[in-house]
Length: 470
Image 1: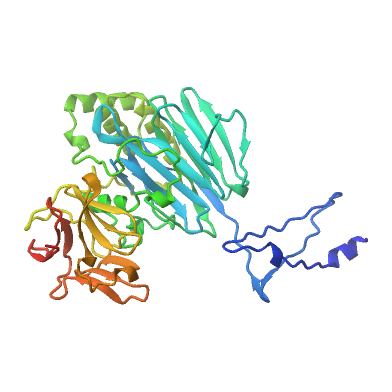
Image 2: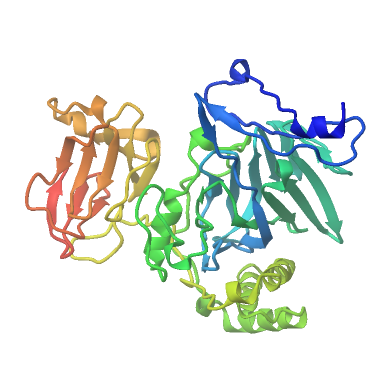
């Protein structure tokens, strides 16, 4: 065939027998045994006669140190805060489910008031990568242990992983197909881990998670899962509630191994940097400066970590953070702040009437089905069957459910929300009210609390009880 003929030839293929339910991917490429140049001029995909636009290619920027030290979070748009909690957390996910990044936080053995990353997990399209630091350093692929790779390893769904070594530090690089996303887990000799991802400059995907949505807008960075955005300078209580909403649910966990401690176990109080022993803080600060830590945020993190744990290995995490942040454009580093200095996650003590302590739910927050919202030794849960119930956490003893009223058709329940106008509301798929409290005289900014006896109370801002389950 002549070159001119090849340049004008067209071909059509019907893919209907290859299309399956759910999301389908069509990749168009040129295959030529004797290539002399790209002869593919254009390609179109049509669905039921209508043209489908091709997805724009992903553009990646430098790496972001999203979870590091013991444990410090840096959001994708540059907000820093401490997040001391035990459990598995959804750091970031694409709404199409092809990118998922989860971290496992455990309390530090010698100081159970601070936490560290002991494992990380990532979904790479159809593959699942897990890396555990304890009891032994092990790598899992699709639920089964494998040897740490000595060369780049191709994954079944098209991604790849690679292990890099630098002294005692090991870095597991994780690449999605066509490098549409990249993550890495950095392991240190004290069996702690930092989790990082490449910044998304432009992508057909949208993202959400504990570290934000990667839209470049810092003020809208912190969002309760399925609910409100928090203020750009959040209180410790708001960060606690936001973090708790992104705790990994059993149905979405990438971890084959269960968490070694109860996932609801968290510290009740924790020291801020000013609360640490002055001598230990001064010594840690000098140790970090001697190691070359000059970035203000990295120095603050390093000083805290070394003083709180007594382990100088955390200097390496601060060095990693400093190097990673230094590679970011100056505009993205401008105005970074650490807010707040320390966080309690979640609030576990029952507030008393008249107090200004944090409630169980924030105004505008929607309950995630199957998630336990804990307080005072009890938890509130929106069950899979649609019932809204309170249980004593120890022994899972039932206390109360909305179907205590036999007239409540709880099976219709599709959503549970603490509304901004002050009502705990259960609604069906059409938005019709299934059950709500209080029935009348609601007050804005009211909050939900659980008492030590398991009573669910809705309290006005003044502390007055507007409604009680007993």
